[in-house]
Each structure stands twice: as C-alpha cells, then as structure tokens.
Length: 150
Image (cartoon, rainbow, N blue to C red; front, side, top):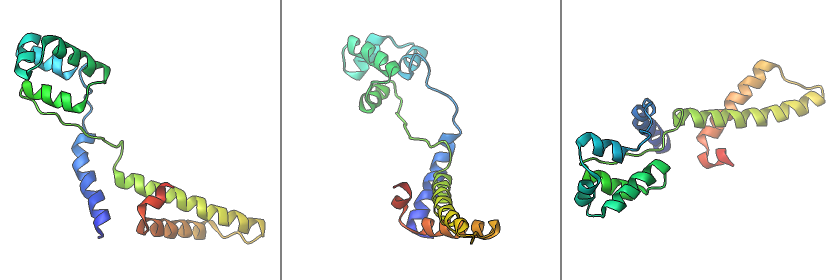
C-alpha cells in the first residue's frame, strides 16, 4: 500500500466518529449554553477570559451568526474550561469520493471511445466496455490524484 492510500484510509478512520455525529450546535450557541448551564454570568465569563462584558456578549452573538473566529472561540471556550474541536466532515468516506470520481472519469473516457466505435459499426459489447471502465478506473487511481479533479 502506498503512503497516499494509507493516509486516505487513516483520515477516513479518524473522520468516522465525526460523521456519525448528528447534533447541530445549539441555536443560542455553545458559549451561551455552556455558560448558562454552569450558572456563570456574562460578567463572570468575561472576567475569566480577560475581556470586557460587552466583548463577551458580542462574541456570543457572533458565534450564533457564524462570524466568530476559531481562535476567539477557542480562547473563550477555555475560559469555560472547554476545548474547541472542529473538523471538515465529508458526507461520505473520502475513499468513496476518490473512487467515484475515478469511475466517473473512466466512464466518460471509455464511453467516448465506445461512441466513436459505434459510429464506425465497431461497438464493443457491454461486458467488454465495463471491463475497460474498470481497468481505466484502476489506472486513474494509481496515477496522480490531482488529475482526478481537473
């Protein structure tokens, strides 16, 4: 197994537990919900974070709006004894995305040739075309991955 495939497999495994999460952030934001669950006022939270109360309130509002920076969310979360976890989570395993893209390109390439051959009354049967698609897909997967996305 080449290092590129190993990295893909490792990343897919790491993302598995994230993909299974279905919870969305609370509508009022994590900062506010956690702060309130702990019974900490905005003044107390701001003091713990070393910022003004108005800055804390503003940060809670920016979290809801999706405009807070990850750095600030990390710092303010630490004031609540929390750590920030974030991830880009693909809808399906990355390996499946790569294989599907290679399959799509292989079909496009092979079908273009098959179409030309059919115009010349030299069309191959479906089983042979399917074999060609499979072989071309494997070639694409062995090649440079970046070429799949051109």
